[in-house]
Length: 116
Image 1 (cartoon, rainbow, N blue to C red):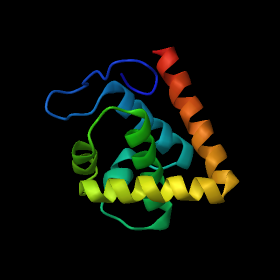
Image 2: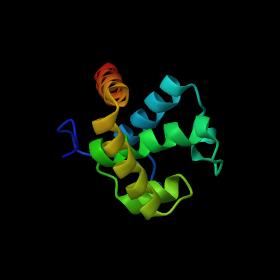
Image 3: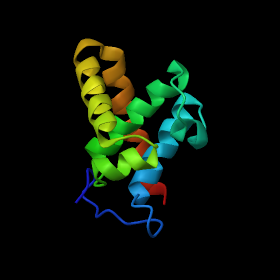
Image 4: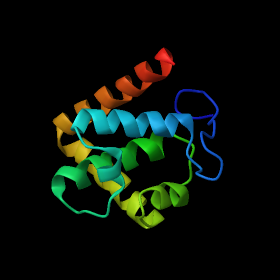
């Protein structure tokens, strides 16, 4: 079971991402006004890298997809996903605004899933 108590449902054969994963990515893209292509790109620009880190955090804490698959989805190594997840977790403890953003994004994901 995933974060919402639902089984992960593979969306595309061979991709390894679930419907939940795709919803999380879309919510992050919409919230930070970036495209999925930008999120999956190799750029290190802060305006793209930060939403990517937030996506890693949400995907690794809410979803069921493994770290290796998440890293491959974003053309990264699984250790990058671990680093981003841990960095966001630490920042949430220090910066209340980030914690609020994460809560808001989780609510948006939940709402998006209920609409489907």
